Length: 133
Image (cartoon, rainbow, N blue to C red; front, side):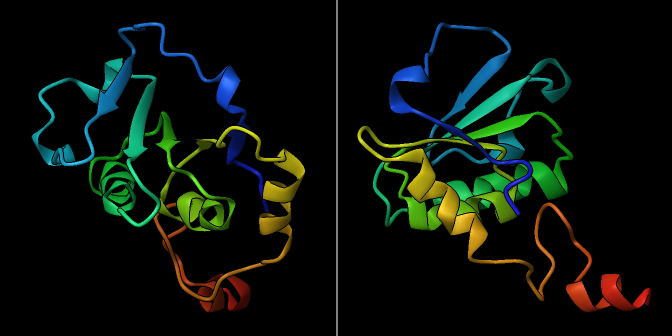
């Protein structure tokens, strides 16, 4: 299932001030962005703690309402049991916390073959795709 979510080790995530990377504050409204998204390659969304899910809503808005097609990266307090939901909401990469084994994170994707509901990445529900309806 993990065809699109790239897992990044904490030490490999570098913020080098690239102007094509937008860091969106956790409390920012994506609909109020005053930058042309066509000029942006990656948007970093931050989880200040794992219980704060506002970045999920931001990712969904960026993908479904705003049509952003670039990379959306999860940073901050990213837990491996959140990775599947992150992918379904439109994230394309996630920075793993220091010391997290990428193979343990990958097992989260191996546990789920499909989902009944549509999501930010694939809006069509599973039954419609499987029956051709």
